[in-house]
Image: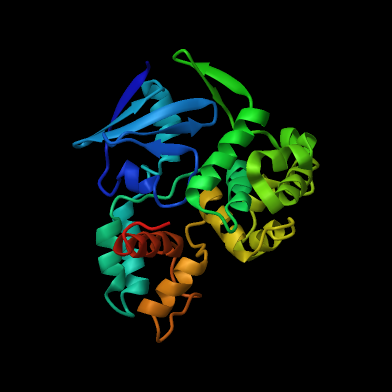
Amino acid sequence: MKKAVIDCPCHFDPQKTFDCGQCFRFNSDENGMVSGVVGNRYISVQKCGDKLNIYGVGQSEAEEKIVPYLGLDEDYDKVNRDIEEHFGKYNDTIFKAEQVSDGIRILRQDKWETLVSFIISQNNNIGRIKKIIERICERFGEPFEQDGKTYYSFPTPSSLAGAGKENIFACGTGFRDKYIVDCAEKVSGGEIDLEEISRMNTFDAMEKLMSIKGVGPKVASCVLLFGFHRTESFPIDVWIKRVLEKYYSSGIDLNDIGNYGGIAQQYLFYYERYKSGGAN
């Protein structure tokens, strides 16, 4: 098995990063190892002191592809200072949330995979989302062999567009089947150009994503944050509504949350889950 070893920056915890609801193809074990598929690679990540062991890729591929995927090239001291400046003026909640959530980083995920994943995520829990995505990948993705085992890449837009609504429904998607088909047809047909969206301002990008059936403000915000690395994007779901009502009852100006409001959102989300015993 290939293995790479890199210096692990501060403010990175693999388990927290993959347990905060931003990615659905990774699982952790009791030894702190986090494993899953990135593109056409199956990787495992384990923090050992000030080093990070990455299994499944060689040193050059880890440095070129996995380091940016994990967000390890971003200065989280700078990120946290910006968050503290914009949220700390209201109260000290963000400082507590930072402390509990320290180690979470926003991944740089594939745009298409993130889009479909968060369409599936609607009115769903993390365990079920993972199972649905696993079935979709096994049925419509491309198999690849690694270390004697078979894994599956995420299906292409054309693959899902050609799969048909009934076959997608059979993966357990429920009412989301028609949304996935609509999304796949629009992306494969060129009506939705994800690279073009990446060049738009955040408002226009939101509007374009919401032209896909089943994509509302929350899903579009999640896709921008987790797939386009728009760290200013601040998804608001039931959890975050509760957080805002609980800790910012006097109000907070969501138009002035800085360049990393989306990362602050993850800190607050994880903090509230932690205080609630990790309930999903």
